[in-house]
Image (tube, rainbow over all chains, first blue to last red; front, side, top):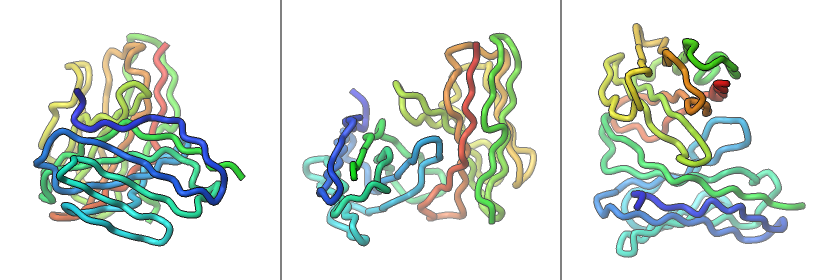
Length: 113
Length: 114
């Protein structure tokens, strides 16, 4: 079993839909959770970052962490065609300089106009 | 700042040839990461450097892979000899000091070994 599981999709939604992207993980020691967005033929870029449990909101994006269930989510409200990309979750144990990110495989999202 | 710069963007080579991928991190960043991305395995960390020193190379698949960081502004990843299963997109990323969260990725090098 991989440490981080993420459904690769693809996920296709109409413009304006609410999108829910999810990852599950097996190691309860993970404390820092990130969502990266990767456009086609580009490198990943950090979208959201959350420490421990709870929610974090940034514009149309909300990141949610449920440590009891070992489950993290990214919600996109009022999705736009420009949101079409692959979304990767990543997580790690600590914020020190020697930390190593553990990555999901990524979920491919297409938002259709 | 131009961000993390990788070269070449694309590389097609024959099996057995040596391949060198190059990376210039963002100025002032002291951590540098080399990743490999494939459809099947996703993003895999190959090696990372802190202050030009290799900290963890446990992700380097075999002795055919080697990485160097001779100074704070340049790193190379070399594959010798290359094999078709090395075909992937290779990313370099850099991050600033202790406690920093975000790693900034380059555009990647798409390597095809035929």
